[in-house]
Length: 231
Length: 232
Image (cartoon, rainbow over all chains, first blue to last red; front, side, top):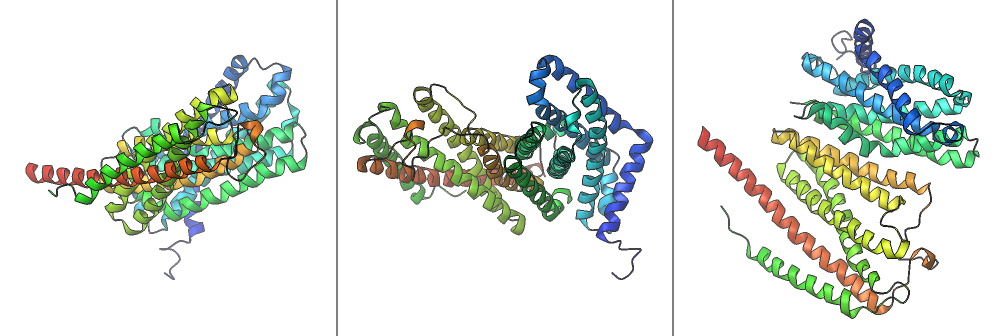
């Protein structure tokens, strides 16, 4: 165990997996472009479905954005795990002499990076299309980050499960959405509060719930990820 | 193959009897509520079934953890039994609640914390069955199922906390005197008899059904093993 090279630390192994995912994605840009185009399409559809005139926009901006991120997120989560499974990479990862939770954290971090990049493009586009400059507030962006962490945490675990079932991609949203409802609702509530300039007392509870959810849904997969990947 | 235990047969009969008594208490014995009238009688079974829904989901989460620790398929059978029975009773709770809600709130459904949490929880457990259906390996099925009940068991209370941030009109009957405007009421002694007996009756029925389902699970496993033996 003293030999550092044959037994990398949890952090080292995690970063290696992140690096691998980012390098692969940087070359193919499959996942990223799919998520981005999909997000923009969802926003366009919302525009017509909800008739986003100036009054409606004021109250539904947070909901529209979070729905978009949730849908795009499932797309990314599915793809990132399906690639591991199809090309047999998962077996390679499992054979590596590293802690299994490093695989979870590695996949979760790279999934989070993809989601954040997509959000970083979708938010300015949304702001531009709807003249909604209020979304560039540190508080709003912080809520986006907190919400994404929780969503990706539980999503990474569930996508590892769903990719091993017969229904595969179809199953992930069915498994994920009911469990992720608290994080989405709390994020919408907090984002909406910030956008409408609500008082701090009104925003602090959903933010606390977001933090609670993030901690719990990173801890549970950390403890039980073994049970999901072992054959 | 073991035959049905006598204790189980006795429990079957007891279940039917207590359900009969509970129905009598709820529909005849309990006094009619002054404001809402007869529709309030739905309350006794509404609470009874809701209690089973809650009980089953807690038992399922505990059985799930027990399985993850011991890897004994016995716990998996327990978990499936609890989720299956609870999903049905929880659905009944929602339907009974709706029947009461229409005259009391003038709507079948409202996005109140309890109702929404109930609907979301029901969806979690339907997803649970879809997850299990997609897996052939019994060990993997048990592992994934256990983990998912655990996730569901943690997420449902948080859902409740979040939705409570939005307002509620669901009455809190026990320990709340000022709820009359929402359709709440305080129970008279006869109502309490019907209420507690319904809780007791449904608990007996629950134990009976779980027992049957666990036994069925064990038999299913035996059949699978026999089939494997034949094909070899």
